Length: 624
Image (cartoon, rainbow, N blue to C red):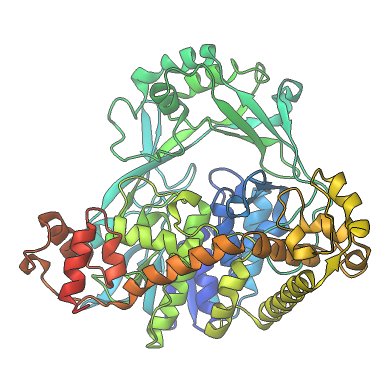
């Protein structure tokens, strides 16, 4: 097979690979996406859901920048919920259940509409090099395919090993072969390679579940979705359910511990601390007699259910026996058992913040290959790798989002400056500027920057301008409009807040925690006639205006703090400096700085083990 010269080759069509290929091609590059199976784009190999705590913010950031994860999620969701609504807006996180077959099919449909993007079904077993530069890939069937840059998004496929009890076999996912050769080649090229593990629960036949014994969990009445582009709401939703384990279930599972690959040492990789297997939860939280489980449908038409919280690598007979001891699952049948999978990853301190590797020019890593876990974490890395591969080929500075600009920036900075010793998952607690990085304002943070780059299209940009104009006009109107006691006291008493004695500005009344801007619009005739709250776009504008008014002091405080800390990012550190010569630094600081090679003083300050005193020494060294 003879191939043309490509600008960028993307290896793997998971969530990272799909976003990388789309971004690079939409920026005008000739791109080839190589995958083992052209039927499985962005496969939901674990839970059939997108978003969640902090993850939902990432999906909205991807969408704001012109990525596809939000669009595909909105088109294929079967349930939507906005999590953490009882908390402040910094914590609100959108999440949806997806039809996993439709999700993959929709991704394929979207990608096939992208110009400059070709596809090739094959296995990549090696890279092509010219000195310290990558120049293409070698595939099992097609041989050498040349390119100017390569993005690796291999997920769990690099030397993947599946474990079920005492049985283990090669595989990247159940029923799919592992990828061989790449890890060994890159190790020989000087890369450090380590092992991680993850797992997934059994899949259950919904026809055999007694849902009457479970707690129903319905979706929200208002379906906000992920994409800032206008879309049709889903006409109906499917329910999820909550089940619980018991002491009897735990006792059954314990019978299998002697066969567990995790406890017997056959699994060497470290698993995700924040998403442990059921046997790990029983062992670590031995004082608990019950754990909550979420029963999630996998699509509109299938009867397959995902038992979230019951991930296991125990023998299938033990898994099945324990399942039938859970209330509501006494007669359950399964499609397949849960399993654990070990795979290779490359510690991400071997990358620049652009996600280009330090050792090989033009080679980018994105997704689980960098030690992350989760569809959303992978997708945003793919987006950034695709963008930065394009910028590299056009001799432009890389796009590096700061920690105050996006959760994407927090994630990548954490990977590079702190490293990974367990699968990395995003949480709101990892971000210092949570009130700046809300899910509602991802477009105002990122769309204009992406539009200037050439990725976010004109429609997105015009929608952003319209939103900014409406929000500003509404805020000005609230500041300029006053109401009399006769006009407003009835509404105030209705919402349990004290009446006013004189004419008062609406913006001042909005500061009361008992009142929302939606309440004021519905209760003040002048506002009600101007704002059609049934329109989703209008509701988004109203919500953002309310947040900006109610939390103005907190937002400005975080902006000031971010500005002060971001000054450290302007202090560049020398690329090849030997930090061992700076004896005023602690020994740990010298070791870490030589290993991680931070590019700025700000990055250096976030490396674990670098103290404020070490930062001061570096500042003096820089003449600051």
